Image 1 (spheres, rainbow, N blue to C red):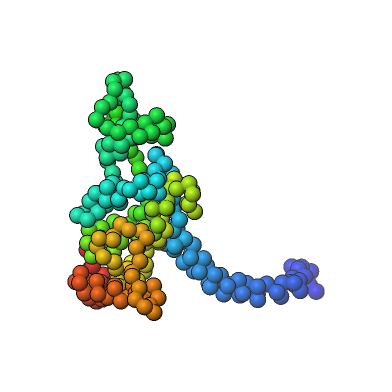
Image 2 (cartoon, helix red, strand yellow):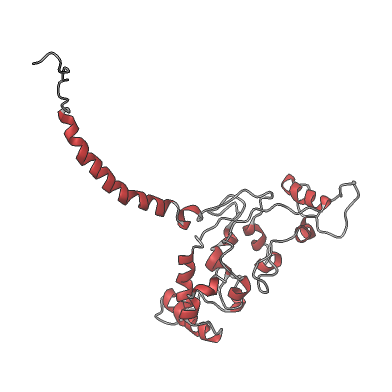
Length: 257
């Protein structure tokens, strides 16, 4: 070899184990293309992110205890039949029963019931009453701003509290499955979930005078199952309450205005 030519390096040879890299990479790419969308779809779904949501509240309110004492849903959520929003009770509503014995200046408070007035759990309520600032309740069932929803349209057409809020009359009770005081979101409130009802509202309709009755069930005729009884009565109520057509109920403009 002529001395003026550069010395050539020995040829690089990949080790034998490198032969397995290509099929591993191909399998990883194909598997990732399948698994990643599935993980994102289920991991970020409303069922995963919303169902079971139960934030801590400034006052550990028990629906179970209050409803067991005879209060109705509309006692506190008093605009549920007239408004889009089912009003969170003001401090004044709570103070009617849980008024402090003394105000911020130490003067005796009169004109209110004083149920558990000395309980430290009610301190945020009494502070709100004395300062005039509202209790900072944390919203649980929170629909996106682009979705139009009216409580009044539903409650006046036979859709009960149970259909969206489940057995809220058992939430916050010490002897129930949900032993933590507060409210838990039981339905995912997704668009698909709403459309299931809009396409077949007869599955959820009940008499208007039973809207807040959590234990109501359609009366069964001889030989009927609970599901058959609900469909029979639901179809009657659908006509009686003039529920709109399926085409209107699942139209985009019905909920996105």
